[in-house]
Image (tube, rainbow, N blue to C red):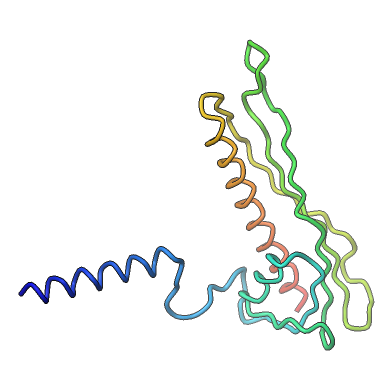
Length: 159
């Protein structure tokens, strides 16, 4: 009986570990709409964006490709939206922006420097500065993820 209980605990802990590490049963997580639409592409961008395209089923090939995608950014911006009566910043607008260009295999431009931007308002807490900074970082990461999905969907709409 004790061995059976011990085995259940071990299985439970392993399953928690696997789910906590982001392990997903059933393969890669597909990002964006129309996951059946994929192509062989060349990307000039950050490793993070290249990985998002790979996770979405696109084949990355630097020599033989159907489309060339250039992504500039992400560029993050923080602007003051409101100020308290004591002249302290209270609310900010956080904006993430990317610029994309898409070319076909012949080098003809399909999309020229399209600017994609996402914003979110954020209330700053002067009581805990460290948590506010990490919260800003999380918001910027969320905005960037939304932009990456938009880039993938734009490319899929061309296929």
